[in-house]
Length: 217
Image 1 (cartoon, rainbow, N blue to C red):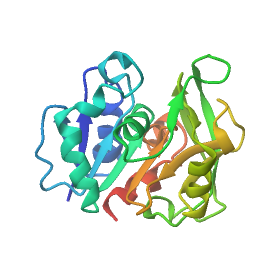
Image 2: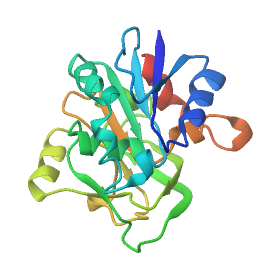
Image 3: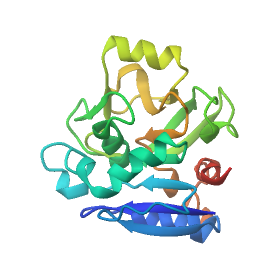
């Protein structure tokens, strides 16, 4: 059982994810360069935060064409677990594995702070251990984390119970306070907060541990 972490030119949270999964939780973790297409033997794949390809054009717009992500589409379609964190969430929307888009924060500032979050849905295995109505605090660090979607898409997310997390206090203007969503099947989760930065007691809280442990449930 092992975790893959896709590394793009410009990724800067891939080692943070590896420390959380391997160093803190003891999960076998393999770093995957963006040109790799062999995802065999992996139980889950993480798209880390950072600035893939320098965030040229739009965040995640170039990364979506990486060979590794073409393999990721098949991996997700077969039920493989996929977690997109911050820039990884942006990539998943560009790739079409999750609906909507991430745009510039409402006040056009980069935000770096701890964010209180509400668990909206525990339908997905990612959040079952928190339970619906649960609360956690995770760090955020983004300039383009404002989730936007059409009214029809928002209704679909609500109808499918696919809104995973909401901000307790909306820091970036996201529609409906959305901090994270899942796909219809529930195996793909995208969120702007960083669970990998809340796993080691030496750096503060550990509210992100259960989310990462779900990679192997």
